[in-house]
Amino acid sequence: MSQKSLQEFFSLRTDSPKRRRSPGEDKEQSKKLMLSNMGDTAGNISVPQPSMNDSSVGQISVSQLMTMMSDLIDRKGLAKKEDLTIINAEIENLKKENKDLHQKIDMLNKRLNGFDRTSRKNNLIFGGIEYTGGNWITIIEDFVKQVLCIEQGILIGRAFPLGKEGLRKRLILVEFLRGEEVNLIMSKVGVLRGTNFFVHRDYSMEERLKRSKLSSIKREIMKCNDRVNASFRRDALLVNEVPFVWDLQKGFMTAKGEDGIQALRGCANLDLSDFMANLILPRNGGSPPREQSE
Image (cartoon, rainbow, N blue to C red; front, side):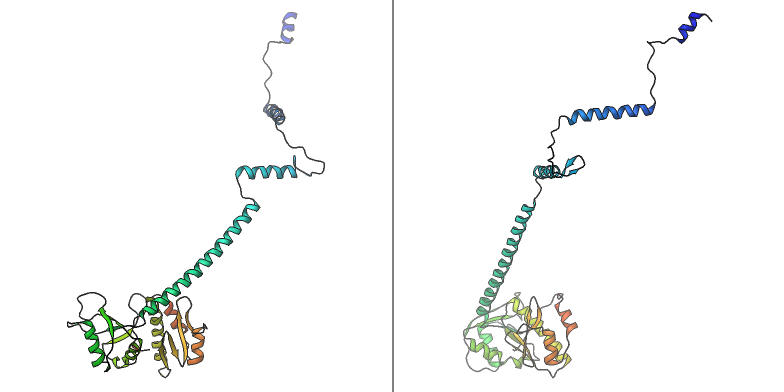
């Protein structure tokens, strides 16, 4: 081999391609490039400079973090503590208004029920009378004289049937002009027991429901102990002279508002807890039992 060939073989070639880097070198070069770019970008961002008294959290201070969070809340429209306080106050006001409205509605219902009772106080409902033709007022007058054995004349404002037309036996609503005649008739309805006739007062739907419950309780009391004195007086069921009522929200209770089940144990030595529990359940159809006397 000649000297020239050796020199050409070992001489440096400036036009040769660069040496290929290893994977580790490529990764290191990428990190350097990324850090360089981040430095250029950070130079364009304005970050509040911490004061000497600020404690640092990572690369920013606590006060800077709080400022950033406050700005974020403002941008997102999130509720602040002051907003929640106002909302809670408004909710409390709405609760109070709702409570006041319920009280006013209850008061109006009581007044309406009072007016309803007043308008019905001289009314009676007769049942079991077969219609054979003629005027209903005359039919009721004859029934009062012949069946109830009341000889004195009574004054009837009007009388008309209730329910479906075409039936021979329909309920008859009778409006009397004087309250004393209503009381006189109700004092004689005991003679109707064991017959198909009945007479009771013209109660509102609410009163009918209450008396239906009390009538069921009365029957259960007499079934358990027929020596107990149980009878109706106005809107109350008297058990051994203790008045009981039925409240649509609270159920069976005394006229003084005491627990009815406990009071019944005391005055009649009867425990109707299970019966009362079943009585509260809604009934599957049927009409309230009719009361013939008070």
